[in-house]
Image 1 (cartoon, helix red, strand yellow):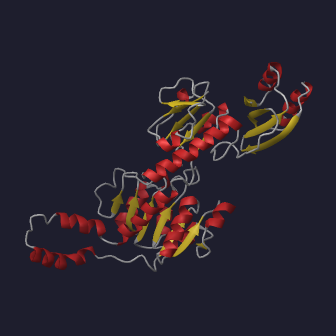
Image 2 (cartoon, one colour; image 1 turned 60 degrees about the horizontal axis):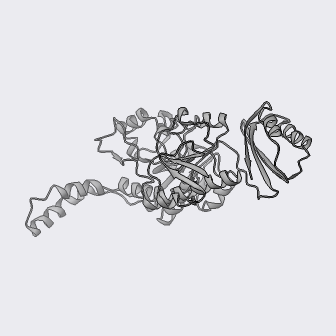
Image 3 (cartoon, helix red, strand yellow; image 1 turned 90 degrees about the horizontal axis):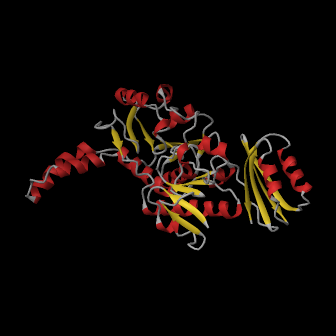
Length: 390
């Protein structure tokens, strides 16, 4: 029986993906084969010897010690795109809130509770409504930085709302390119996008190359009065540079899902309490996706949507399967196959892929290797982990 330790409240529809006859699931399970979590901060100390995989029911994995997991041969799974629609809808709300005095108007109306005369109220509103006038987003230019699952959906929705859309993504995948509407004009560099966009929305993960990328030079390249939206990651924005841009009027408004000291209380900032993926549908989608990925890994060794291991899926053949992680160095696969050959074990199918410093192998065999052969593979220099799946 497999054991799944949960952290945070995971949507029941996701947990139901684990058949009760094969899986024990809960917060208090001991010696788990896998850990499934949302925002819970995992430490290296939480990686007991039994842990073979970690599933994050969401996109970001900043709360997981990914490097330590890689060293242990533990793939970390996430759910890219599962919450994309929820974030897209909130970004669209941010566009509208940033372009008109919607929030200010609502807050003003709430101050009129003492007014009991309907005609007097209507007269007051007619007089004051000009204070909350804004502009329409139709015909304006939206710059989308990052054209993955969320960015491409935002771009498509903005086009349908009558906006011009320009995009930038130096690492645009073939799959993402197929999702992208042809009307989106791809920019060759960020400064070109900054110079054209009336609104800029960020949809990037946090890497060394993206951390603090919206800095003073980026702000200087933007159009005066630009509306900047960040529903991706707090660390992408250099906060002092954004505040300086707001003070100078270079940034007309900053709309974000990441409140921070220095932003709270400003009239030119709209803050939301990190609710981008906080919909029932998004939580369920993420939970189901990650649960299925964990099952496929535990039962078959297949890897889909891992942030630290190569994607690798192999249909089962033979009677037994080895799932082996090793350092990405020459001759490793040859050494492993040589050990199996010395045991007269026939390989029926196999697949090998690498990602950065780690390689991963699935090897299907006609018979179960002996304990001696498995120990020899485990002791081979460069081998990180060995699993037998029968």
